[in-house]
Picture: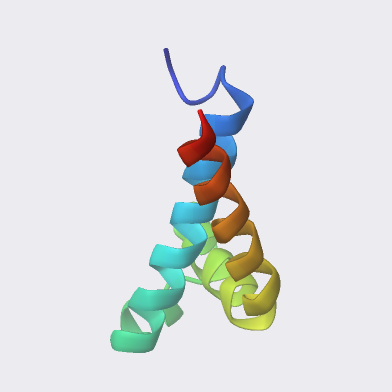
Length: 71
């Protein structure tokens, strides 16, 4: 089943994308910062979300992990 049709899998993919983009921006900021527009701008926006809302993203990752472990 595709992650687009399962809501829990879609949330997991979004959380992983946010965390990955934030990590890549911390390690190599020029890689993410040069693409602020277009399709690759989504990665820039995901990195911004991860930086500014990091406590909430961390809580979402923890709750997703607990949910996946309970299944």
